[in-house]
Length: 487
Image 1: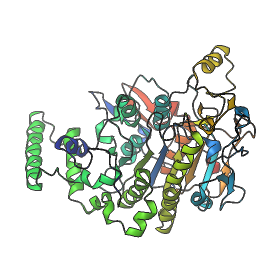
Image 2 (image 1 turned 180 degrees about the vertical axis):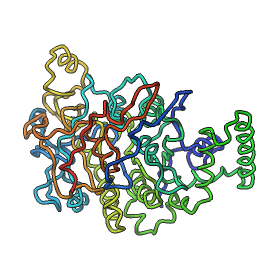
Image 3 (image 1 turned 90 degrees about the horizontal axis):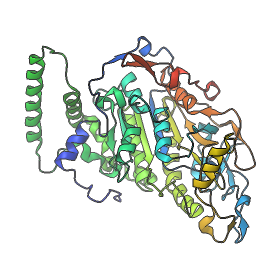
Image 4 (image 1 turned 90 degrees about the vertical axis):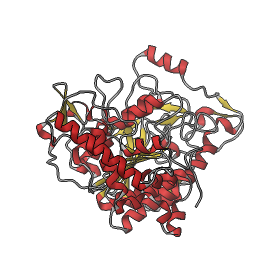
């Protein structure tokens, strides 16, 4: 088994272990905010899914290069940039009439299980900036907000809780939350916000070392850890007695208690990828992302409610292709194709797909010549976008400029599998000519979140009360689940 761990991540130190034990790494504490669930907190919708695997393609995955292919335009030196529609030919899939892009041949074989949403509409916030759109994708709210908006995983954790008492409700795989230069922004997108750290993600940046998250550090025996827990428990009891709140437990103690329960539970084995049969492990093993997909499957089997798997956002790397877009995309397709398809196959074969919703999405798409959207009526904004956007030469001298490099929020594409979603369909439509804007059935960010919540039985107008005001899981409670996507 290959090791994809980050430098220095092979052994967890004491501080790192305690952060993981808190199950709220990167979360914001409530800070004295009074929280009361609204009367509508009990879901009344019949759920079609029990769990969600949210696969995040960090950096802006170009729709025309992946799930919504356009006319293939092979590279020739001296070609005009305006001639580039897609740098890959399309290939047929197991779903009649649904084509996707070349180098996704394994995904093509499972498309009868899922739906392509070609008309996803990322929000328009002026100049497309990754961290703002990442926040929007994860919370359904555009920054800035007057309150700390919770991520979707935290909303699900707070509303539904874990499916098994020994495991966390929300696990985040593959995205470093302590990120050079962007720690605050990345943490905010993954934060439980005003819900409090008890509902933050159990963060596993590196799936290859996930098993270490449920083991005391090498220099701390189990006996020593248990002794520390007993001391913490005694302190908690004295604190509760002093405050005359015998049943109240602070968030830190609750989280550490949950971590202790997980450490001693058979469910902890789900985090140990070395226990996976060799053939199965190798089917996923294309890198850290592939092992993240394997870990997600094991966690859903163990009872985790919401799992996010990230093809990590890393500025100017991964799907943030500002140069060499075509060649980099070939490599990334080879890394995601097999494990994503294997995840769908495994869930289906284990009779889990029908009750597990798998979503594959990115914060926005990419276009060759347009930064943002083309239909903005404000000439000042249009001029600003043109002045500040990534520059693409009018004529391409070499393959370094061949690819869809600019951020594009006019349209995007995403995938949905299982959890009550109809299989073998393409929903919505984009134009056949650049820049491929939506022409049929747009799906906004609130609609996407409402659709995911709808599968779990959570209404789009569910609210929590904060500072005497309702905070809805979709803005103003107006998200509309796309009912045509459900079987």
